[in-house]
Structure formats: structure tokens, C-alpha cells
Amino acid sequence: MKPAAFAYHRPATLDEAFDLLERYGADGCVLAGGQSLVPALNMRLATPAAVIDINRLPGLDGIRLTLEGLLIGALARQEAVMRSPLVARHAPLIAQAMPHVGHLAIRTRGTFGGSLAHADPAAELPACVVALGAVLRVAGRGGVREIPAADFFRGLFTTALEPGEILTEVVVPAIQPGWRSAFDELARRHGDYALAGLAAHCRLTDSTIEEARLVYTGVGLTPVRAMSAEAALRGRRLDGNAIADAGRALDADLDPPADVHASAALRRHLARVLLTRVLSRSVEG
Ligand SMILES: Cc1cc2nc3c(=O)[nH]c(=O)nc-3n(C[C@H](O)[C@H](O)[C@H](O)COP(=O)(O)OP(=O)(O)OC[C@H]3O[C@@H](n4cnc5c(N)ncnc54)[C@H](O)[C@@H]3O)c2cc1C
Image (cartoon, rainbow, N blue to C red; front, side, top):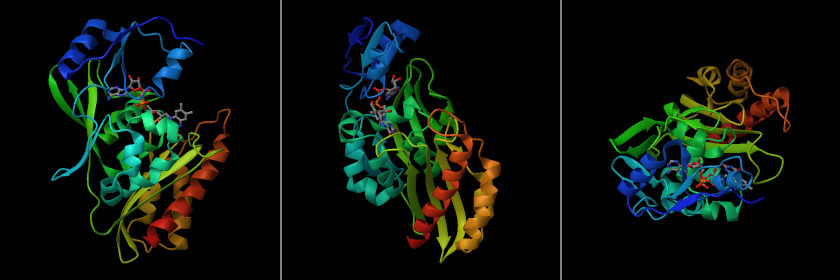
């Protein structure tokens, strides 16, 4: 299929982009990597009057380490994030999740920020930024706002971005001594969206879990934090008994949807399988 006709703009500065977003209002749509938007245009699921291509905005594709943490520009390509030594060293959770995001061709165009702004309920990166306690910076006419990742994802393909705002960068706290991260997911084929996925970020002293952040993808409309399972692990030696207790507690955390891809019962089962796999990997370091 071909998209419905639309005007195409490629602003060179954020101010120009804000002008265009203001001019078109709800009829204007930001284009980043295009890996979700272009299929939606082609299938006429999205029919904006104007597409505002932000790929030429300067300075939004960097990955750098600062005193605030790792700064990942919204326009950093997913493949660049996957191959970044800085990400591997300071945000190993994201490095582990990246190979699960689509395929090489998609990651080569798809952007880090696009994946977050799109807010697909089965995407990997939203769960990672919530587990890591990242902060999303969004810019608009009125200035820059900082939104904790936990407050950014509001519902199905819905975020805290206001009309006229652009996600510009993400501040990811650099991993600290004692913390370990692991990501895994279960999908029908490699590169598909997850039926269920788990981003875990835990602080351990010897083998005792001091703090656990367990965030699932694919089991709700937004990333789902498994608070009961986290509580079941806190202060425990990370062994088979603790993992089994966390698995039982997990039932209270999840209310997964049933759809053409998997029943709710299957998703619950997969979530438990992932808990065991991911926590076992965390203890190995
Ligand atoms: C076959 C296939 C398989 C895929 N598999 C996966 C997968 O397994 N996991 C996964 O996570 N993703 C997957 N994707 C999606 C891919 O990761 C997309 O790249 C991503 O979801 C969107 O990023 P993008 O840069 O392409 O954004 P675009 O497609 O350009 O935009 C997506 C949406 O986000 C908005 N947007 C983008 N950037 C910004 C910004 N900076 N500020 C404000 N709004 C913005 C756009 O307006 C649009 O509404 C897959 C895609 C395809 C085609």
C-alpha cells in the first residue's frame, strides 16, 4: 500500500521543528528512524497532514559519559547503541537487550528515542529505562522537561510527551559497583517483539539481594514492575528457594493480556521462566 498524501518537512533546528509542530498541531507527526511510523503510514493507520523529519536536528545522536550518567541522544541509531563500548560498560542492561530489538536492517535506521516515544507494549527499551531509573529529556517551546522513565509510559502507544514536544535525550545512571543487570525475552522468532521479556537490575552484597528492580515487557500496556517479586527477593540469598518464592509472588504483579500471539496463562508461565533465567544469570554476574 501507499501512504495518503502528506507534506514533508525537514527542519534544521529545534526551533524550526517547534514552529512546524505548532503549525500542524495534531495533524503533524515527528519522523525519526521511520521503522514504526513508515509502516503505519503505508498501511494508512496514520494519516498525518505533515511529517516532520527530525533526522537533521544537530547534536541528538550522540552517546557520551558525563557526571550525570550516560547520555544517549534520541536520534542515536539502535545499532550504534548496541555497538557502543560506553553502553556495554556503563549500561550493560541496554547492551544485553539491544540484539532483541528487531533485526540489523531495522536497528540501522531505528532510533533509541523512537523506540521509547513509540511506546510499544512489547518493546525492550522501555522496560530497560524503567529498570535503570533513567530520566527522559523532552524539549518544547517552553523549554526542557525531565520525566522519570517510570512516569513516561502512560498506556498503549501513549507517553507523557505533550503536543509540540520532542524527546531529545535520555540520561541513564551509570552502573555502580555491586549492581548486576540481565535481560532476556521469549519470542516466537528472534527479532520479533517479545511475548514476554524481563529487564532485571539488582544490587547484591556477596550473594544477598539488597535491592531488585524487575521490569517486564509484553505482559501489559506499559512496562510492568514486579513489586511483589522484588519484595520476595529483598534481603534473601539469591538461590533456588528465593527464586521460587519470587516466582510465586509474581502472580500478584501480573495481569497479562491474551491475544492472537499468546494466552494470558502462557504469558504468566513465560514470565516465571524468565524470572528464573534472568536471576540465575544475575547471580553469575
Ligand atoms: C519488522 C520489524 C520488527 C521490529 N521489531 C522490534 C522489536 O523486536 N523490538 C522493538 O522494540 N522494536 C521493534 N521494531 C520497531 C523499531 O524498533 C522502531 O525503530 C521503533 O519502534 C521506533 O523507532 P524509530 O526511530 O523508527 O521511530 P519512528 O518510526 O520514526 O517513530 C515512531 C513514533 O515515535 C515518534 N517519535 C520518534 N522519535 C521521536 C522523538 N525523538 N520525539 C518525539 N516523538 C518521536 C514518532 O512521531 C512516531 O509516532 C520493529 C520494527 C519492524 C519494522
